[in-house]
Length: 335
Image 1 (cartoon, rainbow, N blue to C red):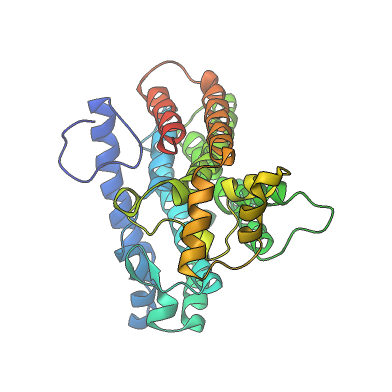
Image 2 (cartoon, rainbow, N blue to C red; image 1 turned 45 degrees about the vertical axis):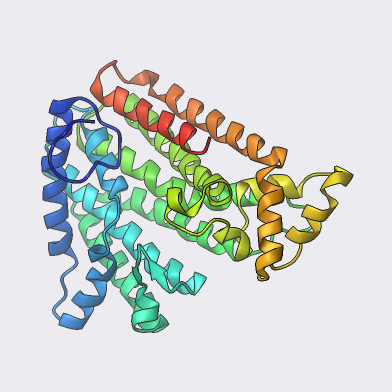
């Protein structure tokens, strides 16, 4: 990575010229984001800026800008607008997520529902979705259609997360649908918007959208593995947080599918809430030693490899190299 001043980009860009362009454009995105979420009413503006001020990697708008570099006019105004659309949509979904999860913290800061209440958090999320829709309308009817389809998938994923799989359903397949809806859909649209409004060919647009969906899901699944495998110093959060809260994750679901009698104790622990510290620690220890961890890592590597294969439609160069490097980083961060 270059030594350019400023925080690290959310994607691994090693070409200094490309990095400089992306940094300059991300500065424009950041200023535009603050302008777009202003309300006539100071309290609404304060609530809408609450999570934006908490920071975040801005991965989705950066992917818009990087994908636009695959086209003939990456500096088009529509690219900047599209970058704001996906980030504001993402921010809106976080307000709703925190209500559903009854979360007290988000990005190290008090969540909106904890600072105010659920009503304010839900309506602020709605306000942000409305703002993203206003911006999408500036991009034309086809962008409106894409955004509507993306939003439908995102909400479907959120709803599926609250529903237990049926008796004949595969719990892992159900979970992967949740991840594809909640995470993969908007990252796919980020890459699609960048390619489209940056002037890339239809072939490149479709390749980048497919890449975004796959690598976005793989990134979330690698988080699942880190929740079990990493310590608090590495990850910045308490290990096994999802496990304690009963949130299904890739390695837990793979372990739960075991028919090996030697796993009876682990399966017993996973079948009940792990609110007791000693039982939680025991389950975490058993999971870390279980073959499901390597199985989950192998699955993430397969998805990252699949994502890279979609980039064959792009010419060799710094844009493709950055996207390939991100897929590689996803594959290795969980190992």
